[in-house]
Length: 250
Image 1 (cartoon, rainbow, N blue to C red):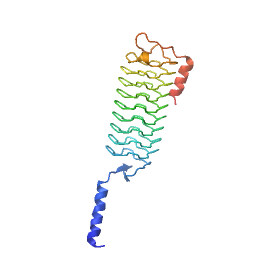
Image 2: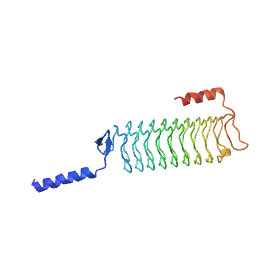
Image 3: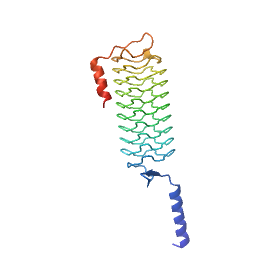
Image 4: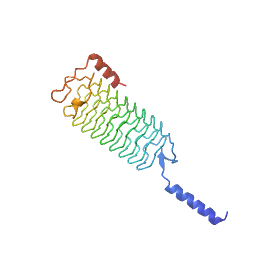
């Protein structure tokens, strides 16, 4: 092969390396592949296409993933704590037992995700779309779901202690056995939602829409629970409150 061809090949390789999208793991370049399960904390991946990637067990804490495309990502046990996922497309992602505490999911598309057991404490989900999501037993303590859409999602036994659902769309959402201690739902639409056996001590549902069309069989509250006019819930028993405390401590 002559020197000219060798030089052209060398230049082409250099150009490809320069233009190929990349990530940084602990300051080192990470190969752009459909599977990366190492450490990529604080990576700059805004707007990247990670569709179909396998990230299970990876550490992406505080990574910048805003407006990225992550449809169908397999991310069981992934660490996205403090990550910025604003506007990301994560439809159909598998996030079972994922660490998502303090994450930013403003306007994020999370329809049909599988995230049972996920930790979303203090997460910001303003305007997020979670329709048909399955997040059984997830922890949303102190999370903000303002104007979020959760129609027909299954959030049974989840922890919503101190969570904010102002103006959220909760039509047909399943909250069976969930904890809503001191949660707030100002202006939320709960038409057709199921709160069977849910515990709502101190929760504020005073201005919700569709209270009479929601299912509260077996649910309970406290003297500080605020409900729409003429609505009522039985007071939680000591056994129910003890179960509440036990679940909160997990």
